Length: 381
Image (cartoon, rainbow, N blue to C red; front, top):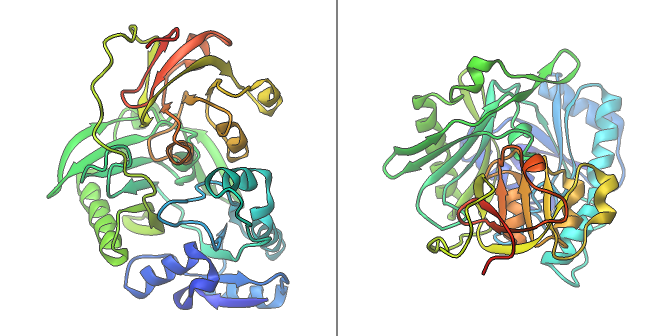
């Protein structure tokens, strides 16, 4: 086993850790941490590094050698464990993260985007101080659907896991050069995930906080500046995960935007009035029977060409994306892991579709327009 301080991370530490190390060396606000490489885990050496970080909760994340490239993100496909505190918890988390390239979801993702490629048996593991965020989320420095030169921000209360997992429909802010907010859509943000005491707690968001944007105007400007700094450092459009705690903005991940899209086509007048609408997240149009999936027990019902309809998706559901003609979720935003993977797989997706599970009927034919965010009945042409 080898342990490398995050500030010294090199390519052998995996792309996530290496890129954060580059950002840290360039002066960007990155939480401190270290990287564990190699198959063996030595508790004493890890304990020494945890002491160096000052104790407290950490984020333990896989840092795969093949992830975070310009075409393959592995968004949500490798393991992340938040809030581990004790040495025993952290050792278990390190082992789980190291082994995550061998999970079914990672193999399924790799088979779709890198057919015939052999994935590594294990991944380096990044351990960082966990930012106890007041609000957090994701920003892209280009629109991944159209390639437009805008900064897209998705934000919600608490830890950013709520945004990347699609557990909530976040606020969406669109910022055009030189820094003008051209659209602000306040998401429902019904729940939040926070670090409390000795663990993570998901709780309801107060009605007043659901109804307002969690990022103030000056916060938008700071996030745009962070994204542009990352873009300038790495030389290409960036997918940035960020967190704000006690008024300070932190960068917790930076990787290339893997899809750029193109100009949106006009709406097809032959398509019927939508049954439901949501956030257009992966462009294109697809038709198929709606398949309502509530849990893993429903996986066996999904057939090639079905339209996957669910409340939200879990990384373990990635194999279904290889079967689905399109994806519809009740919660989530354009920058969630599910939306990223749908774009990489080239299937239409509409997220944040309120009451999709009740408005759509299992087995009924639907047309999903991921460019315009509509779901209509029947097989329209």
